[in-house]
Image (cartoon, rainbow, N blue to C red):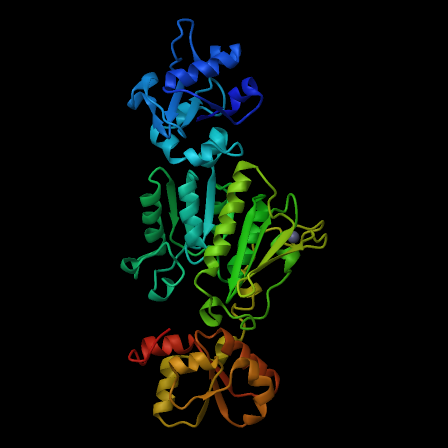
Length: 470
Ligand code: ZN
């Protein structure tokens, strides 16, 4: 038995079937049998002299018969034949696909939802991936493998050893390289026909519109609130779909925000939490596989949007809990009061997102202390009370000598252990949670609280490189 895969334009001649099963010992036998099924089909395949038309390509198990024994190519039971005609003037022009392309994408080409037409859409698609980190890694690899023609990567970061636990697009030899360079190289290794555009810069209110405007779809693989709001607002202003994903510890969220058809990120979260309240992955941790799962779902949503197939996650928020291995789905509604996509938007151009997220030039800087200043004052024997607000498992890895551990969550109930008369320095891993702790204490009337800028990470880097780092 030989299965013959019928291309979309010829299916009308075989009862709209995607494939037919026939018997035959050579390609010639099979084609003759096909021709005998329908006169029209026969005319599509053969010219007046009974020769196979030269715009009809025939593949046996993904091998072009022109490189085998042409129509005399022998067949065995279980073989699959693909008929790939070029369609003159049509949009699904096989001529734009090379022999390698047909081989590479054969598993796509036989899907009716993709086919030549869909593969051409993928080839012409331009997708911008913001962040070449945990979410960006599977995204970039799968988009490249699937044949997305142009992939933009925005990232200003370097590959760090601590990235390798989840950012699978980078390898040990890439540590210290620019993430954009490392990711672009892997994409080339997977699919050299993909055009990669690198943006080795932070996405800002100044450059976001000019970068995003050239793309069909934006995928948000960022790890911080300012960039997330920036990506959202820029996509709303430009009318682009924004494939959103976020991860924390063992949980993830995915949605597709397209303000033309549904809600945006601000309809869901109008404003960000105060800085430090929601720890970043660097501070809160993230299980290595999780970004793989969430990023892969984002890649799938992007591909569905390109193909215009299936039901996108527009108006739905998919929640994933890895520990319970459970997906849940919430309905999202467009907020008519949304400041950016609502009926009377108040945000009509990009704003200062650092400031919007409370990270900007507030008066907080005056209440910070640098690691070198802290070191100097500790060495001078000043009576500073040093509070570590990280978790016990982080305290186990490293700590600044003389510090006391009060995890952020315990601070409200243990605040009586502190005296407002003392000068207090709080620190965490990189300074986010401790900024929150400092603000919390100040609100309670502690006047002399300082936040250690850059946290223990900066302390290890600049003061004591012999300490364990994480
Ligand atoms: Zn909105």
